[in-house]
Amino acid sequence: MFPRSYESCSGVSHGGRSSWLAVACVATYADLVGTEAAECFADAERIAGVLGKMRLASMASITSSEAEAVADDPELLNRLRQALDRLRVDLRGAANAPRQRATSPAVAIDGGEVIGLRRQLGAILELMSQRSLVLSDRESALRRVTETTSRVLEVSRVSVWLLDAKDERLHCADLFEASTRAHSSGMELHARDYPPYFTALLSERTIAAHDAEVDFRTSCFAVGYLRPLDIKSMLDVPIWAAGRNAGVLCHEQVRTPRRWGADEIDFAYIMASIVGIALERFG
Image 1 (cartoon, rainbow, N blue to C red):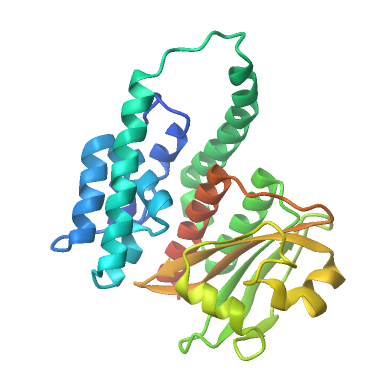
Image 2 (cartoon, rainbow, N blue to C red):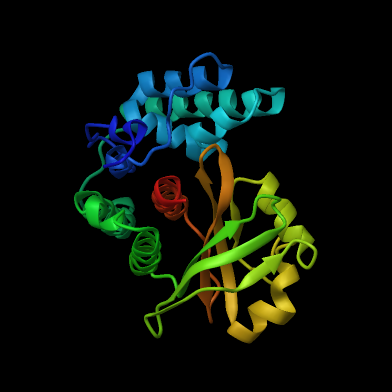
């Protein structure tokens, strides 16, 4: 079973584009009593339930468990309050927006997004319905997450990298390559060799490098990693476990560049949360 804080979510909102997030019971919202950041998440929950908390986390680029793990500071609180204001405005706009005709071009455009969201929702439900198998051991959990994420987001390579206690080394615990359907592990990256990336990893919430060779956070990988493997785009989201950044869930697209969408980033965060649960359970 999931820890209590992950099981407390319930209900599905069907009124909006991101309603699938409401079923994501891996939302990391755990007893944020007594902090101003916690009040922001509580307000978001009062406004829109679990969906509100998830959307606030996405807009503010910080999950509620991350907020719990760090002290309140003016920059964090300002970011959360601005995101909360945007959430209120977005919800008011959605409530007042006129319904569009089925033949509207906008509906046709949204159709592709709906298909993607349904695929993501189906994957989340499948993982949760089989959580006793998914979380049977750490290796199985990581393999299921990397395979599922690769299939659902149609990403060439998905991997789990774990940080050492000093935040100086990343160890690849599992890499799944869609082209061969093969898993591998054991590679290591050191902060001394890739300082821009490690700085970003420890200071930013999301590394969405649409052009990985140009992005200042990932360009340090160009010569020895990106070019030999023909990796064009990277999306890295943190894995939080036991109150610390324990590593990163990495998505790598080969051959053609890719611009990562907000819903894809949200889904990646949910998959990273499942990895975090497995790490807390098995170490």
